[in-house]
Amino acid sequence: MTSKERLLKRSRFLGIGSALIVAMWLATATVGSAQTFKTLVNFDGADGQYPFTSLVQGRDGNFYGTTSWGTGPGTVFKITPGGDLTTLYTFCSQPTCTDGDQPWVGLVLGTDGNFYGTTFYGGADPNGGTVFKITPGGRLTTLYSFCSQTNCAAGHYPWAGLVQASDGNFYGTTYDDPTNSGLGTVFKITPEGSLTTLHTFTGPDGLWVESGLIQATDGNLYGTASGGGAYGDGTVFRITLGGALTTLHSFNYADGAYPSAALIQAADGSFYGTTEQGGANGRPGTVFKITPTGKLTTLHSFNISDGAYTYAGLIQASDGNFYGATTGGGVDPSDCSWGAGCGTVFQITPAGTLTTLHSFQGTDGDYPMQALLQATNGKFYGTAAGRAACCFGIGDGTVFSLDMGLGPFVTFVRSYGKAGQRAEILGQGFGGTTGVSFNGTAATFTVYGGTFLVATVPAGATTGPVTVTTSRRTLTSNVPFRVMP
Image: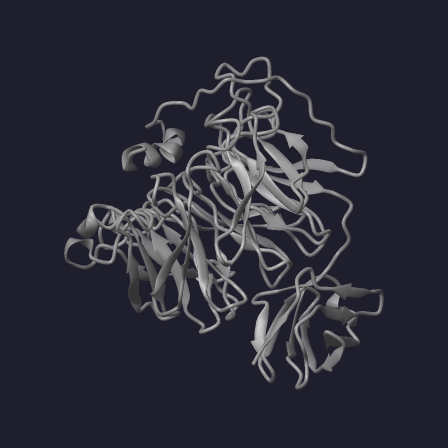
């Protein structure tokens, strides 16, 4: 698959590429009585189009995301849990789009309360792309413009989002690097906008990086490359904060191909992810598990009836299971002329048992491309890039929720820290908080509102769950807080 072919995957929504056509096995999906799917927003173009994005929860309890098109080349938006949408910023508001053009991924919440993201185009060079910061109120600052150097030496086309690591800096990837035959880079950027290229891909170690990075419990960054490796089908890699890269696995199509989504590190310490294609059933894609040492296990191979083409990554929810979305497959509406299915939302256990929770019908959205968010109210929220009577790329997209009956919990802006450092905690109903503890050790805290508080990691605390006791209930974190030495 060439670089041009990979870019066509998303550009088909803008009328550039050809439609994806696959065979379809008709199937039905059963949604239990405790599962409620709801469309919250139908984008209409004026408020944005094509949300190729995961949502992120802010300090205020609302969700933030991006669209890739609309009245201008993309927006940043805020949406309440009930579905009230506000456009915070429209890109290309500045001459020649120096403020960025077409964000293709979501945002990350920084420890300063602001959001950080990337645009695929725009900046100092129309084809370079940007890194930006935006406040919850919508004030945008361009931190860095790619291709501001001779021959775009630091890369261009930042397809993926950012991660804020333990050193306070942000890390990300670019899709292309013109100085090295267009293979991509890994970079570090400070909150003030100083960028350092950490690694330039050469092909055998991967190429065409579409996914963001994660920081694991060992302090290193982990990611995927959608091409390259020993067989040309993509890789899983580890890279230190200093830039030393190790290829952990090269996909061979039989165990998956073209991983486009970020990994997650689960409670068992292993990493979980998806591939767009490959697997036991050929093209539809896989869900996999990989250990930090590189041992890979294919947990599920999609068969179109239960989903296909998994561009989106996974999340591990508060019930211990994984949740994700497929871009195609599932129940096929009878009027869907492409015959490909509109995509699914699924649950998969750590052992690999998959359940289809929802099959999109076009009118409720199609083409979900990014990971879900489990908000601290227990519900899942996501986006579908299109919406129409048919499937694949017609219509302006949706935001949806899925209620699985899971209860509220607390989570963190960053799930690690040293004794004496601040731990920023997100949740619900914090107004009557009476206590916060780190794995049983009481902590001092300050409540800043019903959905945000800051605790100080107490001396003697150990890695484990954080509990917040309020006047109504005790809330437990969905992931352990890692106390660093």
